[in-house]
Length: 427
Image (tube, rainbow, N blue to C red):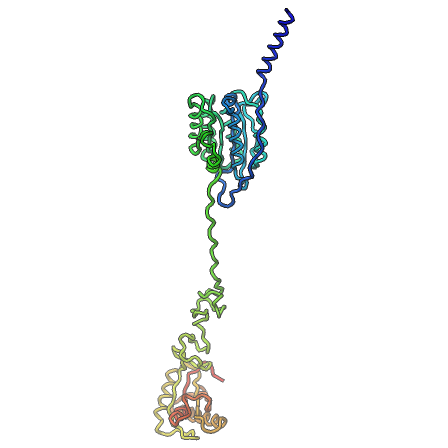
């Protein structure tokens, strides 16, 4: 009888031990989706994130078990995060069975450059649930983790929201620590205790002033969870500015671009035409720019008026054919010549230029034109007190006709002498 009682005691003890042994959670399924790529359409909304996964005893309730629902949601979040954007990530668990950990909270992953495979492996390390719900400790630890890496951060809490009365004070503390750089998001698992857990998680999200509280049912579908993740992690990229077309270069700064400028080295400040050539150009060097010059081929050295025409006096002396004698009736013309010379007394030289018509040979006409110029020069010196040093004689023969030699009247006009103001004595 005593032996039977001993056997019954041992059996009862074994049953008690077995009934208190921790029960391992089923292993986490493998990643079942390809990495998500968002390309250039989005940029990161945050720099860092951390997920707090509740593994306390209350999460062992429900069918399926609340912990398995929570772990599944965290795994789906991991699969929904874009892998082509850069984040620092972390995963923290709370409320363990003693078989899992003696710590109130464990940082299973991070804070480091986010890698979906490493995050998934860390999630699979939670094998047992149990213990209380030290959410306040997890929040403060997470706040320190996020402060250490700097930047904008998201804290995602996946929990039933139960047995964590001191969590709001901890949330207020990390909000004071991180300010606008922290947003808290919560996902409520189960509906125990008449919604007290939902109210608690909503309170935590509200404290951050920029987070959101949802239930597991609200993110059950793939598109719903994706939208939740995108709200946390993504913002649309600003359109890239259209590259400004470079204005065509204008190397000489004349207002005409190089591709159209036919005079690429115009002096600064010169007015130019449509092809960039200077309107200030003075082709004949008379001091009057081409755009104003009405006599564009003035001989070098001759003084000109404001429109570029030579300052000269043409004497209408009718020389007989093959003659250089000045007839008395032309003394009035010579009076004009003397007055003209005295008018420009500051000019060091006056040129007496003789011309002929085209009758006779060119060589003969050259000599004849000199004789006619000399006759005028001598007359002015002898009769008007003009210094002989002031008057220079040149004969141009028939080379510079004033008009056509085809008519008698034209030839008469060409048999002339001109008094020309000069600064530089022409050759």
